[in-house]
Image 1: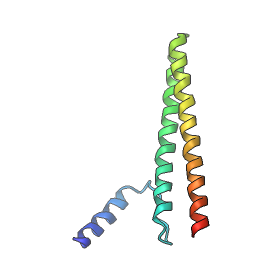
Image 2 (image 1 turned 135 degrees about the vertical axis):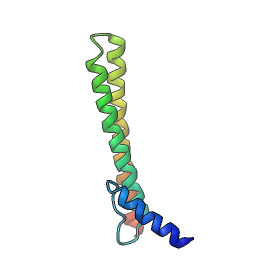
Image 3 (image 1 turned 90 degrees about the vertical axis):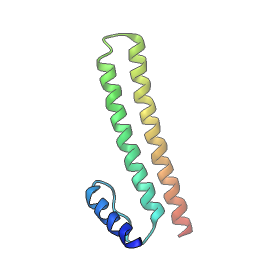
Image 4 (image 1 turned 120 degrees about the vertical axis):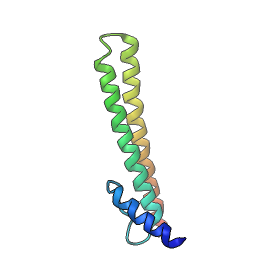
Amino acid sequence: MKEVLRVFGEELSEVLTWLPKPNPDGNRMNSIINIFLYVVGTLAVVMIIVGGIQYALSAGDAGKMGKAKNTIMWSVVGLVIAILAWAIVNFVLGVFN
């Protein structure tokens, strides 16, 4: 069973080449945090683009403009929180390693 999972994992990693590769030192937590940050960063950029499109299509409607600004603002806030979480986790891992 372990062999099947290992082969499946190798095949899956070849398909998902856009994900960061695991660290050779075996630090799985750092790899998990890097993947999480990559996903959150990508999602934040997509939401900023969505907010920009909403803003462009608002046609001067104050309610739609406010919604678009909130989308952009909260996307940036989420990105900043994710970056701070990454920095804190890397600091803690550095202290204990």
